[in-house]
Each structure stands twice: as C-alpha cells, then as structure tokens.
Length: 361
Image 1 (cartoon, rainbow, N blue to C red):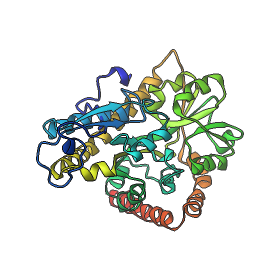
Image 2 (image 1 turned 30 degrees about the horizontal axis):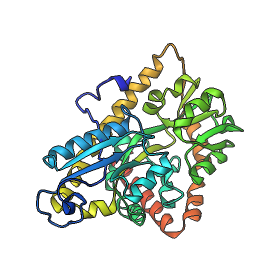
Image 3 (image 1 turned 90 degrees about the horizontal axis):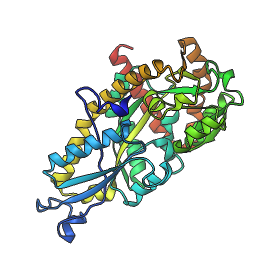
Image 4 (image 1 turned 90 degrees about the vertical axis):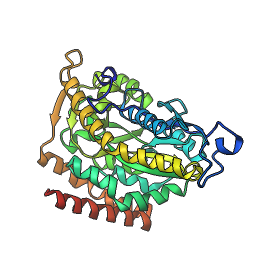
C-alpha cells in the first residue's frame, strides 16, 4: 500500500508550501517589502492540503516544500498540513483566501459556491481519455491558466498549477454499470450544485458530505456510494466497506496548487521566481506520481483477499449511455454561471479537441 511505500520509484515526492510569512526583521518577515528585496528576507510558511500524509496531495506538497527550501537556500521554509488540521475542505479555501495560510492545494469542487466557474471540472466526460492529452491541456490551457485563474484571483487566491490526480471511478454497495443502477442511489458528492445535478441526471439521490465522514457513512449504509481516483479509494479504505468498484473514468480529479495572491505579490522577485520554478518542476512529477500510484493501488485492491471487491470496467457502449445524460450538463453550466463561465468552457473544449487532434486521438 502506498502509505507504506516510501514514495514512488525514482519520483519520491513529498510536499508542501505552508504559508505564513515570518522571521528576520519586521519588514522582511512579513513580506511587505516586495519588489527586488534585500536578499535576506526569510519566510516560514504553511501549505495546506486536502489529503493525509502518504496520499497524493500531501506528498506533492512535501516535495514542493523541500525543493523550495533548497532553491531559496532556506529563506522559505514550509510546514505542510494534512486534511482536517484547519477545518473542512470548504473552510480550507477560506483559509487561503484570508491569508491564514500561504499555499494550499484546492479542489475546485469545494469552491463552487464562491467561484462558480470552477465547477467546470465537475462536468463528466469533459476531458480526454488520454492522460497525456489532459496533462498538456491542464498545463497549457489559456482558458484555465488565464480565464479561470482570473476568477480565483478576484478572491485573493492565485492558481499556480492545475493537475490531475487521475481518473474518477465509482464504488457502490451494488453494481453500477448503467444509469438505471443509480435510481434512488444515495451518492456522496462535493458541495457543488453542478455535481449534485449531474447525479440527479442518472436518477441518483446526491448527498454532499466531507470525506472525513464518508467511511463511516458507507460502513453504516447511510451512503450507497462515492467517486474518487483509485489511489484515494484504496488509501482511504473505501473498498473495505464497498463491494463493487466500477472503472468508469467519467472524469478526472483536478487539483489546484494555489497561493494567497497578496503573499505571492509581496515576495521579493527572486523568491517569487523560485516559487514559479518549483511549480514548473512539479508538473511532470505530479503526473508520474498519479499514474504510478493509481496503477499500484488498483493492484492492491485486486489482491486484497480480506476485502474482496468486484471490479468492473465499463465498455465504451456503457460509457456512452452515461455520456448521453452528462452532456446536457454543459448547457446547465453555461446557464448557471453566465457569460464568462460559458466562454471559459467553450475555449477549454476547443483546446481539448485541438490537443486530441495533435496526439492523433
């Protein structure tokens, strides 16, 4: 299991920029000088994640933190916080907004009530089935890295990178192979109107719930199923309390590496450049981490004789039945979020199509 692995082969990553400028003299430690700086400002920052030690976000953050400390010769040191240290996923977004933490990994699904445009990541069957295409789009998309990022910056949160934690899969206390299987199915979702409406399209009864409550809710039968990348399903032990897993790849789980905008802008130029360099270094690392972790932990689920799980992979025909019900949600998104969000979605769709064409898909 990954939590015992010591980190991925050759790509060990462990993570985090945890924010809160301090140290040195008052001007330098508070990061108020900005500009070129005098070369001796030091910062102790906090990096907040939505996962636990050993899981992808936390390991990403720790590697980020280690690289940033080395690159800045110790002028930026980081404490990485795992999920729950500073409240729920929604509370954590408020922490980064308010500057109580400097860095955070944020899931857009938990920000939809604030930045409605971020709900586009909840649109099922939006991205490519090709992981490399999605890697390219997330890194290079103007729709995301400019258009959507500007929406977050209005709330004092600057996205530094968008990256995938892998394909989303379903688990259930009964098989999930066709939309009819979701009829009256209590489906755990994030706090997102779009996600909830998407599952209503399948006939499910969506129930918003923080993941810290999810294992017990599944165990007690209060919730019938959930969606997550494979690595998270295994590491959170959801397969212990769910008999069925469907490899649906109906979406990818996108995370955002973010920084408090005021803090970022206050950094001396050389330290801000160091942050940007680490962000770029982490892009291929995160990609390889999730590919390896999801593959290894799928094997772990398959080989767990104490908790046998029926694993079923949807055929393309079966996926198309869900896709047909999911595609109208793009218009729901356009109507719900307005003109700017619609423009971001339309541009992103064009970028995905262009990237797929370039890859030969």
